[in-house]
Length: 502
Ligand code: NAD
Image 1 (cartoon, rainbow, N blue to C red):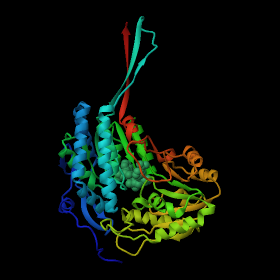
Image 2 (image 1 turned 180 degrees about the horizontal axis):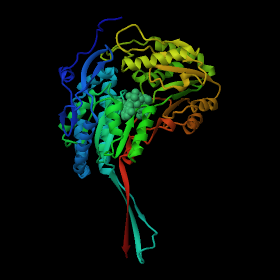
Image 3 (image 1 turned 30 degrees about the vertical axis):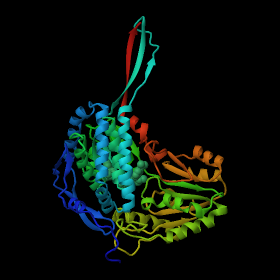
């Protein structure tokens, strides 16, 4: 086992001070101790050390937070759209001003590279808030000329009004803790909704800091509340509470189904962003060496802990050996290290539990007899690392092709044609994302039409933009986030009928 890793960036004093705080729940613009008196430990995935503690919220705490959000809804939903926009833009500025602090906090808690924390968790989040803030003043309805024949002599005019759905219960996972929270906060608040946010118990720290920063930006008390705790406890208390109007969930398909059932019991609106087992098709006109950086990013971004990451590679047989060889040498050359080590290329997984889950999945695949070209093991070092792993020639019924492993594990299979690749790519319960790599325009567009997934990349895999809807087909989800799609998810449409006598 290695002991202390060197070459790490220095941790800011405000980050150390935040970790040492006695954390509480954020309800109605203040820190409130949990009525349960229970707490949960928070770990640094690079060292396995406890770095902080958070409250494990009770049902009563969740109820308290929902009541605060309900009271704030009266204020926030009646505010002029331009005022909501201004406050959200200020929120983006405050996040940006605290960017390095938030990035370090995320890396220490989630394990990811400091580059990713700066670029995605902070940088993309700031852009996301600014993008969504602009929608506040652009939410609109329709007018229509109606054919209703009563009252006699009247010409009926129809209008649609879009109104905020109400109090949102947002439940987010651990892979992009800040980014996923911001997708929901920015969209819901833009529409005039208020929120109770439940971050993952593994990665709760940036959500707590964001809540304080929202207050600093001038967002009124009670508009954003944060309750920390276990999924089956605080998470379920939120999802099944009759006092919320919408659940917005991002996480695994198994939990998503449970959340959907809980929400439906109260007819609470819900959107679900769930798992994926995303295919990447590589055609015979591609040069593996030239596209290797794009393929590696599509598979190993955030150690493969990305809902949209590629994990099934369908490679044309004529370039299969060369492409697999190129990937193998790129993977073998990757250096492992803490997220605070700017030169490391592979960081730890989020938790000891997840490390064990990935390791067990690979062991089960090994027992099936699938060939492991490289990786496949937990390295002998401190922290929750797992080696980048390349499997080949797995049969379609193998776990390698079926199970979302959500780690640095990819499975490459040769195909004879585009038609075969598309058929195999669609042979899954999931449908979140997919990519095709080819120079042939017709093949690219045929795949874009025929692949059953919510997002398709052509000669790319992984980047997202707030101006393009994101969500899943099949068991990868229900509803869409981002842009106009998000506005539709956080508003209700009301029809207004007006008889006009001309
Ligand atoms: P998870 O489903 O275990 O947990 C997600 C959140 O739900 C956490 O906050 C957790 O505490 C909470 N939760 C767990 N059980 C609950 C319950 N019974 N009731 C209410 N809340 C509960 O998922 P995870 O392991 O944190 O995240 C990984 C999963 O998230 C992967 O499947 C990944 O594909 C998915 N994901 C999807 C997207 C997307 O946009 N489609 C994005 C990121 C992650």
